[in-house]
Length: 109
Length: 114
Image 1 (cartoon, rainbow over the protein chains, first blue to last red):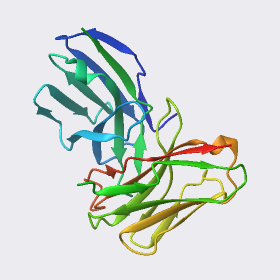
Image 2: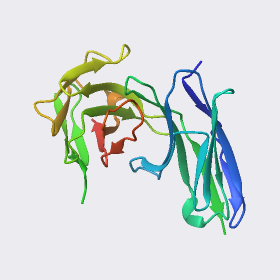
Image 3: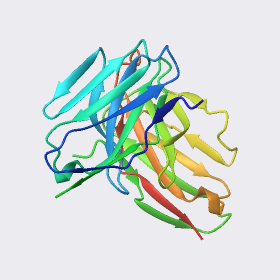
């Protein structure tokens, strides 16, 4: 089983729609969790950190469910500029970052 | 200002010819990572340093080596690049305190092997 698994998508949504997707992780000792955004042929950039049950930043909401070992990301009022691959990243206590393969979101006009 | 800088952005090397990729950081972070990312795949951790302590992943080929001469710099050496080593190589840093810290990435070096 992979350490971090994501639905690859693609999620193809119209502007203004809400889109949500999950990420599951296998190591129950994982301490912190992140969502990164990666544009085509660019480096990953931090979107949100998720340290407790979840947090919200503008149109983006991340939820953490430790009992079921998953993290979700919800994007409200999607913009064209939200089109990207969203990487779920889990940081264990030994400083290693485990990446999911990413969920591709395409927002269409 | 860029905080994690990778050079070069694009590197073309010949099959079997050693190549070195470099990474520098201005964040004074303890941890530096090297990842390999191939098209449509997750970044794969090759190794990381916590200060001077080197941590190699079990499945990282011996062909890949790394050096960290000081806090600011880290190098990835590919001793004999093969066609399968063509990828984006990402350097990242993190503070390294208790796991509750995000990583900052450089812009990556895209390696082509001819």
